[in-house]
Length: 288
Image (cartoon, rainbow, N blue to C red; front, side, top):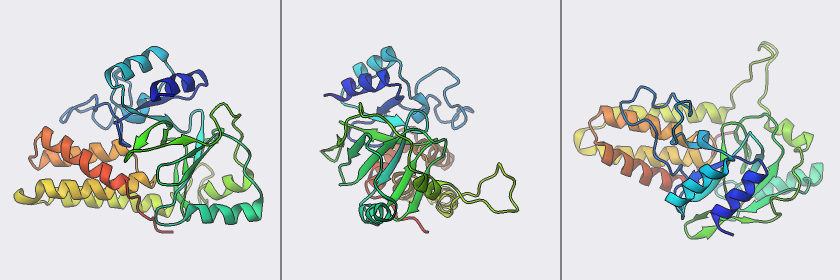
């Protein structure tokens, strides 16, 4: 079944999705707010236009048809945290399969629900939404995709290889087991207000990495500006793939910094896309 047909099928189940660049992992539709627009990086779709990454996600059949009519070979992604949450088992760097096997030995099996095999040999397990946010590296090789995240969906293709359903999406969704939720939840301290959760070290690490790369780009010399943009996009793409940063946020931060140092819009778009996609093919191992 084509990505278009899968998208229509998912919309009938109430799973909002959006277009991903053909063969890639980043949103396909260019930002609705070009460089210099004060709404760039601020608007989350309130303007009514397409071009807000995961915030474009929809179940509207007419909108989906229009998207695929303009880009029939696009990949497809589900926005997580709305209708589904996803346990992402990675096999690059830390072996998430081994980690998961150890957890299942101690706690028992996961409930039978929709699952996907990824091009790299990893797995996605779909669950009913929990209200939790993303949690990159909550255990070695394991990421949680919740509010503010997304996952590529079958039959999307990266590096010529497919995302494929293990158990079909028509399989009923179940809540994740309590032991898994406990691992994913951010830790609180007694001195903290009940409503405030501590950021995971991986999230703090990712924020520092974003600030560092933007700083490096701001200091780049004339002959090295484009190369630095490529290096920064690659480094941050690795963190996007690890689930620690949002792709749209990274693109917007780099684009603004690159514009300030004098790169053209064409240079910026091409270089960020190239570096980000390469980085996303090599997720970074996050600190514990």
